[in-house]
Image 1 (cartoon, rainbow, N blue to C red):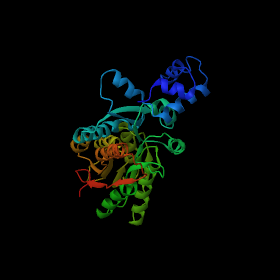
Image 2 (cartoon, one colour):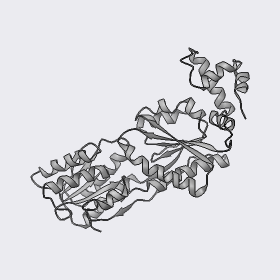
Image 3 (cartoon, one colour):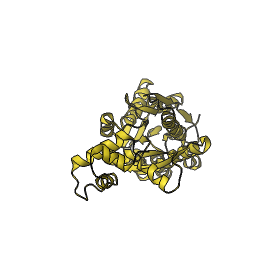
Amino acid sequence: MVTLKDIAQYTQLSPSTVSIVLKGNGDARKIKKETQNIVLDAARKLGYKPNVQARILRGGSPNRMIITLFWASDIRIHMLSRFINGLQSSLVQNNYPCDLQVKPYMNNHLHEALNDQTILASNGMIICNPSESDMEFLEQLNAGIPIVLYNRYSDKYATINMDDRTIGELPARVFTKHHKKRPAILKSPATFNGMNIRTNVFAFTTNESGMEPPVSITVADSMKGGYEGALQLCSLEVLPDCLFCASDNIALGALKAFHQKGVRIPEDIEIISVGNGNPDQQEFAIPSLSVISLPMEDMAAACLRTVYTFLSTGEYNTSTTEFPIHYVPRESCRE
């Protein structure tokens, strides 16, 4: 077990200086950045884990590993419960000797949350929702511990993904099968490139099927955003006959607007949503919501399994696991 004295001896610094830096108080105690970096680099090289040391002092098990989950604090926060549920179920079912800690971060500011202190306090990491700039940071990072990315692609890290092309293609195929001609899209500003892929593939596939170019409206990823977007569709001279919504939140808001305007679903307009929300809300909406189901719980379990395998075997690779996507028909759009 690496101690503060080991790090002090390695760096030729006093144990008190090492302790101050590792507790995150270096700036407050006016310790030079250069000295702080020397301490943190040494701690990482020597394999110092402060959480492990503290647990031993408290009489807890020193053999449990700390997995840190990073999740962006933005509109996607409502999806966190499904991901946590998948992790929790996997921990219980597999009896992994792991503890989970959640680290929120602001979009485009992952580097502020994933710092040396966090690395030292973690045995492995699951990183969700990184933006393009966050991915650039990760590609330059050398953390020295296993990292798995959720729904992103990388040549450097193991990744757990879903097929964004299929997410856009499936609703277009269903609408084509139903002989629809006037498609529409309600989408939110893209927080990662996969969102653009979904809507672009939908537009391409409907065009290939002989439909009109889709009416595309960008709204906030919320029920209010979906409500306002649907009102815009209702104000058009000719109402679209099929609608692809980029999220459950948007679709649920749209349902209310169409109800208020007397638009019948699915008779006047069929609706399919990306199923990234609560399945109960999808099933018990009026009418119930047809979705492209995203296997978030299974993907969360795969993220944890991948990290644990790396930690237990000591073998790290940049494997990519892609989960299949399927259509769940309900009342808003038939089979």
